[in-house]
Image (tube, rainbow, N blue to C red; front, side, top):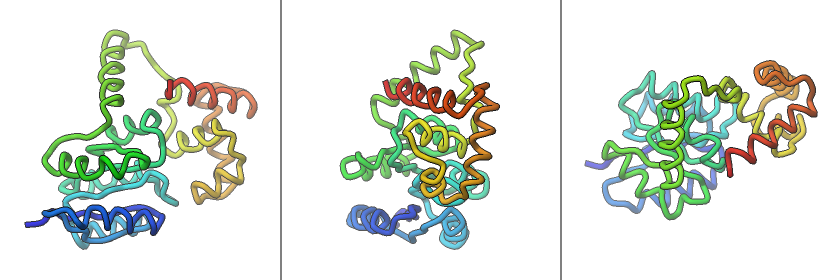
Length: 217
């Protein structure tokens, strides 16, 4: 009996690529494609797939929030996150949300089949480098219970905005990338400044740039 997979990505070309790649694998069947989180939840309700491959950058509800909903409402559906975002930024959050694996889109061709099979077999999948980093950070946190990174207080959407600020994106560019209004972006900026304890937009940008450089090093 084939294991069923739902593809969730807002780019039709990416969805077709996953379908073409995985549809040729014996024992796997693509049961549907969704371009948004709401569409994905409706299709999961209808098809009850064994696995959902979820992109982070979805309009409205992002992929990490979608993962939380899937794990809460449809626990029999496993989640594999595939994203353009560097795994050092989002892999841990994805796993904490309930995903069973994380792959960067730049690695999809060589890793997605192995990742899908491992997750469906009950395992987890991240890159070897990310796995080592997660274990190292876990050990550090156990040794120092006072460790508290203010960035960890950001919501998943605030983290996306924070990353784009660090990449030098304007309010309009952030709004377009996340499919939200400029006013909503400004609201997120204010909340981020409050949580991080920074006083100005310039200081926020400097903090964001330094943070991105640090997590990728």
